[in-house]
Image 1 (cartoon, rainbow, N blue to C red):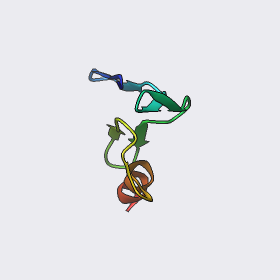
Image 2: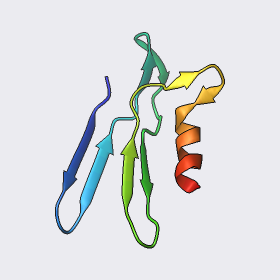
Image 3: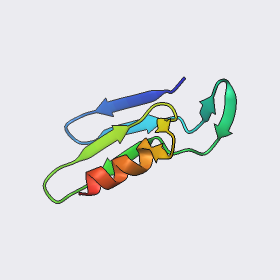
Length: 70
C-alpha cells in the first residue's frame, strides 16, 4: 500500500509519499523515492508513483524522470 498526501494553498503545495517499496508482501527497498518535483521557470509540477512499476528491464521511475526532463 502506498500513502500519498497532497495539501495545497495559494502560498504553498506539499506532496508527501511513503518510501517503503514491497513486492508480494516482501520488502524490496525501504528508501525508495516515489515523488518527483519539477520546477521550470514558468510552471510547477509534482508527481508520485505507486508500486514497483516494472516490466522486464523497463522501470517507470527512470522513464518518468527522463520524460519529464524532455
